Length: 251
Image (cartoon, rainbow, N blue to C red; front, side, top):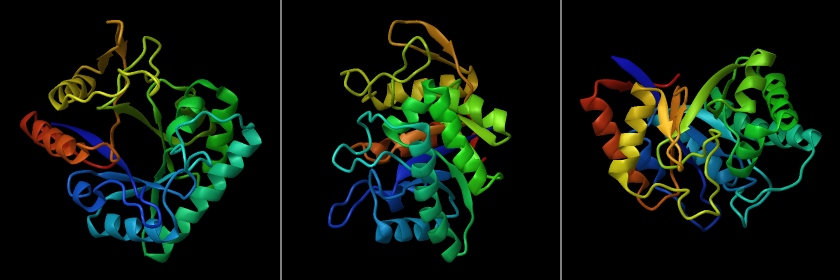
């Protein structure tokens, strides 16, 4: 029996606005990436989401993003490596405080959205992010896109890394995710998404939008908690993994 970590972005509500079904999702996943207030979330939501993750014995990760509430952190911004370092340290430090205050331990760090994708191909940005993570806690696990500059930078500095793949996103032939500006970026068919996930776990491969087979390393699979059918996704992938004797377990 093989194992896989199943992670979900959550804590993305803000003030009076509710996004996602966090408590329901926590029943099926092994790791939670909690928004840190810049692209989504706020102090109250961060604290509540940490408490829920601890309640369901789900590993807690910081999910820092670009300072872009209106664009949900998914719009590219021109930032320097120094700014990236400070953004990561600031946001992760804030979430870490809530985790410690609630008697937990920060398990991992995963950049969000555009920052994640930028660091996947920009080695200077990737190095700045992993330096911030390492300086905060050299034992933290860095989540990054399989085969990316972020994973390479994490390995180089001595962080433990987890190569991530996506159940609900399509891939380009270079291994990057299809831009959300394109209509085929998100896989809306649950069965198709599950087939992709099983292939990534069992065969360590995914097919790009142009039909190219790409080798991937699947340590952890992401489900986006903000999609309309996220709960349906996670229930069905949980069932499919059980059938295939794939154990869902935090890294």
